[in-house]
Image 1 (tube, each protein chain N blue to C red):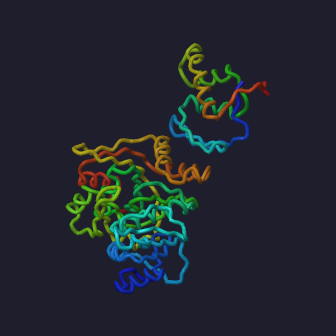
Image 2 (tube, chains in turn yellow, blue):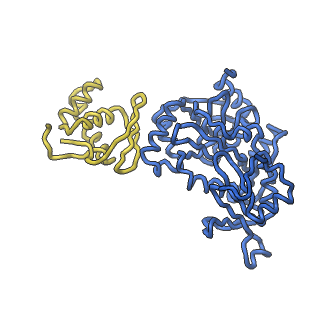
Image 3 (cartoon, rainbow over the protein chains, first blue to last red):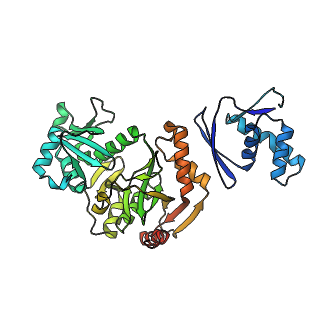
Length: 93
Length: 305
């Protein structure tokens, strides 16, 4: 399961397929591509598992499940490294 | 309102000596005290069209540019910037008093004026739309800025773009344009009518000369402008003139790289910058010919409405 980092407020602006995000906790601003934008959008609605996140990507990109499966972990790792999201033990509501 | 040009040289020197010269540059007033003749000479040449305030009026900044004391008064004399007892800069040779004044003014504004998002950029305006030219030193920003200012574009600033946090408009900060090394001769040839301060050799940036801002731009220093273009200039000898679109999100991130106080402003800075980028087209600009550059930007500005 993944969730946005608790306590942070994200200000964001999307232009075309790119998103700039301001993280109120770190004070950092990040430039994200479309895939990361989709993942962050899903997680802002609440914690989600990797199956849900993969489905969200599959809706946007014409990729098969294996390709999504390969792409998803590094994308989540990058968002986690930016401290925008974190893994969590919680169950979906 | 009086202009600095209305002061005789003797009165200008007296006011500087007594700390009674209060100079207005855009939204700011600066009380200047100096016992250095070169400071008065530089102000007379470069700030003649600027307004001065009454000697006892409020000033946003206090700038003391004084000769260093001790044996330095006689041997290799130096200029020292002092602000209320603090001396944040290393003293410089006395001959560099005018460049130091300009650097000190930039320092005062970029360290204190946080009602603005401050970007290292030149700003010019034509037909009500402003052009922002952010760039690192050596990119040809000031050369392009000077050329545009001498060809009918209103100069708002050569060095600091002031984006008002209240409404996102660009506040003019009309001051001399700093030109370095070969750029000095380029602009002298491009605009023979241009007025310059005394060139100063041997600075950390080489030879520096300041172009006096056009009086018409100084006179409109209380008229803000709405940004329409963010153009990242780069001079490249022999290159063809080219303007290449930059996606808005990339424009945003590159403006952060050139901003002085974006991090300090926090989310407010993000919102102000996002609004600015919304309003603008972003581009990379490569040039080698000033005439072609002027023609291109005049084409963008179009005809007067």
